[in-house]
Image (tube, rainbow, N blue to C red; front, side, top):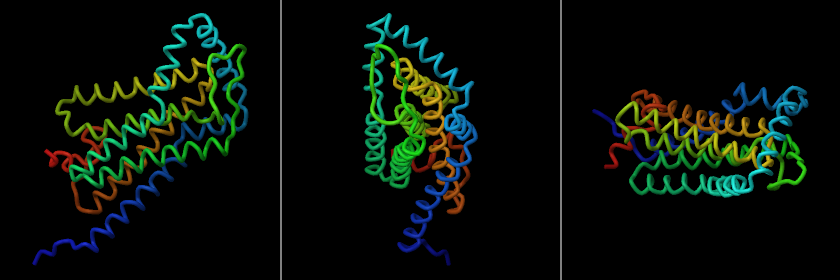
Length: 250
């Protein structure tokens, strides 16, 4: 006789999901090679990286001073696409998913954006890198510089939203377009921070990298849990994190 899963089994399964999400984030974050290399170079004051950062900062600062309207546009854009906006969008998407019955997918989204923010604060505190100090600054920002919170939040936010959206995009072209738009937004947000002189190039590069790493980690944890539950393997970057559950909502 086929035994249906009971409430205890579901709770145990949910606990395993939470554990896997947490462990996956920790492991991927620790072994993300590009971010680790940047971290080592920043902490050790690697001269070529410092020279590159300073060169880019000076070049963009000259343009910011020469074009006030362009600088104002960047200042508005960096606030409109700031970390709190991405958190709000992801939470709003999660609430909608929860309402439609996709509760594990909603939990995944909230866990991902939350871990991203907490990890950013932790790394900032540990590295404690100073922000650029430029003559006649056009913008200021509080706190430490590495990694960029704006860049990391944007990378995490767009990835989460695209992964939620993917099951509803039927063509390969539509899925590719979604990822291209996501990448463009993330890079633009990173650019605004360097152009406004509140971050080094390596700060935003690390933020983008670590944001993607966090998403990859939680996706890996979710996929591991899916396989343990006997569900079919998926390609998250093409199908989303839980494609069949999303399709059932309509």
